[in-house]
Length: 176
Image (cartoon, rainbow, N blue to C red; front, side):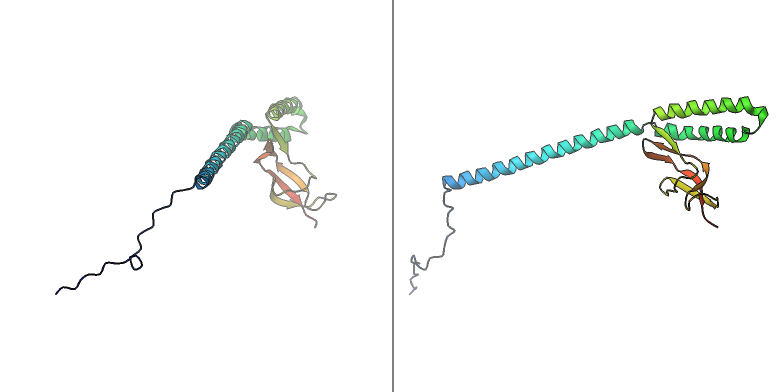
């Protein structure tokens, strides 16, 4: 005889997965509010990114316009060096007096043009040595000058709207 199978009764029946209870209107409203808040946050972040990009592009454009002449000016600076050498060589020589005046006028006109485009020269005897803008090529001992002051300018330095184009090559004063 085959034993009868027992039918499970309600107490011993395996649990079936409970069906999801239908969401209440309050739950649906809360879920939708959360979705709206998340979308609003995404939109605000996208707007912020766009504004940051716009600001960065404007700054890059301004910098480009501000420093667009940098390479040209860098190539013209040696011309000023040659004019300075001509002036240094001609001064004190009476035969070259008119020549020195002409070279000096040319140099001044050249400096004025560069100044209108934001170029300034620096490097003078007596100013404090600044390793950010000066290149020390040696030391000298000059009476009456402060320690670590520029004792001699070998080559002037140049800035383009505050940006260093070339450091000034100087001799630094050291006490003996």
